[in-house]
Image 1 (cartoon, rainbow, N blue to C red):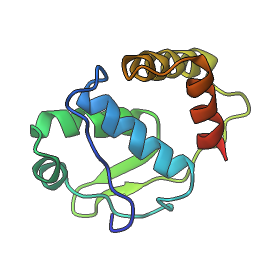
Image 2: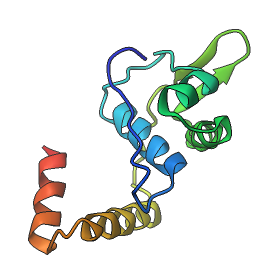
Image 3: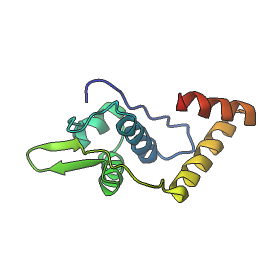
Length: 123
């Protein structure tokens, strides 16, 4: 993974593994990490972010469960083909929206600012 970077905000109420998972999922879903792109090893990403290897391993495990990445011994961890769901997982979307709203409100953002940020992210 040479282009996009992942960052973790240790002051955020969102757990570090979830920050990593969400950022990588967004990079994959947005096409910024193309299919078959090799990701850093768990140890390397943990060292780069100053986190425990278990934290990164949990994020990778959840990404594998979502079929966004695949790990093969000797070939490393790579971006999988992006699955195209006919219908979005509304329960997951609601959960993610709640987490975002909570984090945004913690920064002092009001509803207008939160909605503006979502619209900007969609563009």
